[in-house]
Image (cartoon, rainbow, N blue to C red; front, side, top):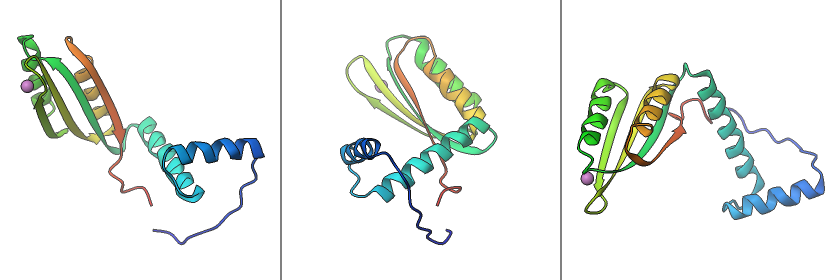
Amino acid sequence: MGSLTRFGVSLDSNLLEKFDALISARGYTNRSEALRDMIRDQLIKEDWKAGSKEAVAAVSLVYDHHELELPKRLTDLQHEHHGLVVSALHVHLTHHHCLEILVLRGRGDRIKKLGHSLVGTNGIKHGEVFFTTTGDTLE
Ligand code: NI
């Protein structure tokens, strides 16, 4: 961690008002913490664009397990990339529906491709990939 540096920011008053409303709605109690988080978020997005750095993603998948081939396809896909799948949680939501939460870790471009393949598997009713970081490159 580096040393703490203070700097001034000049902003249009209307823009500052909108910023304060936004961060208040998100639960921040001060501008510095909100600004730090926004900077970190942009840095993580840049890492993801590069694709070559180690990254982490969480994938959520909702599907009907009565679709006979679907659970097998999801399992096969995960086994084909077992080095990238850190953890898998399966919840039997209802009589029909299952929720799977997967944590992927590896090169950004590889886990992005796997995450999108999982979400794009035919029969998935709702899926999302949440891109995050190992945290090692952030202060
Ligand atoms: Ni289930």
